[in-house]
Amino acid sequence: MTMETKQRVRNRTKSGLWVLFIGFLLFLIGIRPAMFGLDRSPVIGFVQIAVFLIGLAVMCGGGYLVLNALWNGREKSILADIGFRLVATGYLIAAMSGMADVFGIGSHRFPKVPYFGAVQATGVISGQLLIVLGFLMTIPLPYRHPKPLIKPKSSP
Image 1 (cartoon, helix red, strand yellow):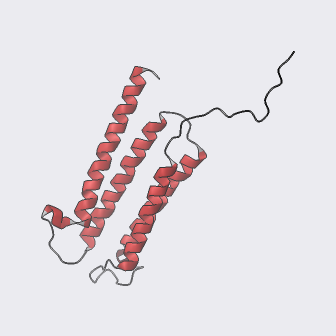
Image 2 (cartoon, helix red, strand yellow):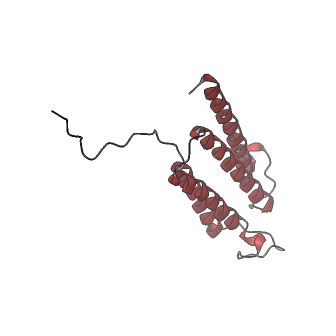
Image 3 (cartoon, helix red, strand yellow):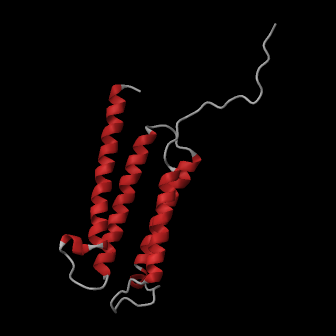
């Protein structure tokens, strides 16, 4: 690997980590606005749910950038492809669970105040666990040459 390639991978990794960090801050603002002096309501409302889901989406994008940079142009394995799709599926589950009342599939319809209850929290956590599993599947492992099953016979 040339020095220029290493620098390019390093820059892409740093950019992805910054995106991931910004997404984490957005996620924290959505989950715990009181940490930043932004709490205006005792319940978790639509804006809070939207902000933490946007933060989760930005974190997923940053994680994708970082892990894609670590592959460094190599062909991704099938496991990595499945992992990236699992990240997207996990986010979809988290977003649909978080916004269930807004989409009309929750226990409280949208014209009323959206309610973020235990069932929705379980759905969001399940989606986040799928995201983590997907990212773990996309970590590039070092390439090892396969060992031959039969040792070649030495000629006399």
